Length: 224
Figure 1: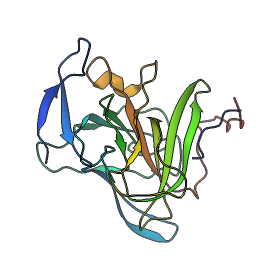
Figure 2: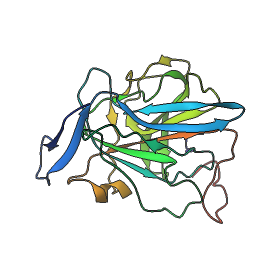
Figure 3: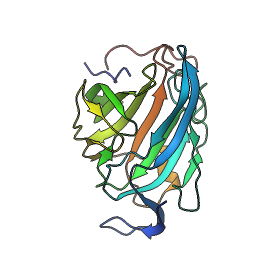
């Protein structure tokens, strides 16, 4: 049975290592602050900063951060952090017709060879593989962030997950080898260069809120 997990820096034109592509603007960055969650949940409050999901000390190419609606009612809204002209390009993508916040999740388009780093410091609650859409093998990591143990930071769409439940990570620690490249187009691909780079999905969830599965749609069964 297959189950989903319960779930500055100069800007320049850059192209992947092979293939003919349109010019794209990417930000070369370490694990710089990307967005912030300001919310009160389960009696706890305080800002939680989400960092770019690349490994500390490496040069990670991030093309775009595309915010969108999560499929979880417990996902908290993220606000993009703006610093100067070198900030990572970002936008709120078109609605997916979900009754959740327009910036409750972020798809971060990264270079195909960029190693993935922890976007927050904390303790890994769970990690491993699952099957996306009952067809595609994918990796995930869920972190309980320092100072906000009432929340879960979920990172999806990775290959070579390198952490396990109980591991402590700090911002920029390696958690996976690279982003998962799927054989289908995603919403963010219409906004980036060609060929499309893979993306990492990040959301911050209050786990006390029941998961949302779409308008008028019953929760799926435990298997495919």
